[in-house]
Image (cartoon, rainbow, N blue to C red):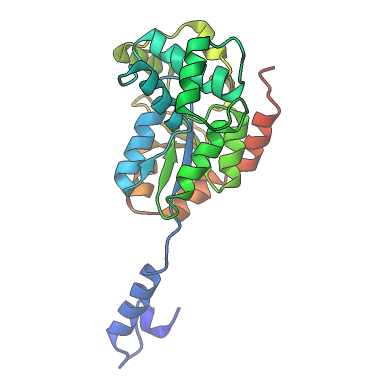
Length: 267
């Protein structure tokens, strides 16, 4: 450290030299936060993402941005996830029509979607490509994703430099949140193709260091080196402490999580 910035500066050296050096360091451009939140239904992924965006002036960018847009155009109103048929429509458009291009999707719905989405559909990366376009249009923005559901989505974001975090919560708290939200989730829903990756990750994330965990619960967190309280996590974001957040996240290498997901251990 230069003498002018030591705790006991040399005589006759002006204090403003130290201040100027500190100011120049503060002006070094910071890379934006780019984070992905994984977790089960009711874990609080969207809450954590919205809070992160609020603290940083960033945005929540879901893969399903266009799925919701199309669903709302079909319904003629906003999607209400408390309504089972609305949730089913999201899955039909997002997975059956969008990702898989299934021929058994209702013909009237297919015709309407063809009007709304003249581009190609029926391939696994349809919503990933859409996400990348939206993210690319905001190169300086802090971006937080709350709906990563498939291995190709996870691995594409990791390749783009996003850091994945698992949102941890006790089962009792998760169940009460779903009840408050009025979402009656059938057991079969957890094995739907759009949920099975997060469902499977939830069975191992606490005991295997696959992903850094943000503990989103007032109940005590399990004692693990890869679990951080939401208070500490939000403080890193609020103070723009990218170094602390990144160091913590890298305890669980993102590429290892990608490889785990690609192996599809739920099959």
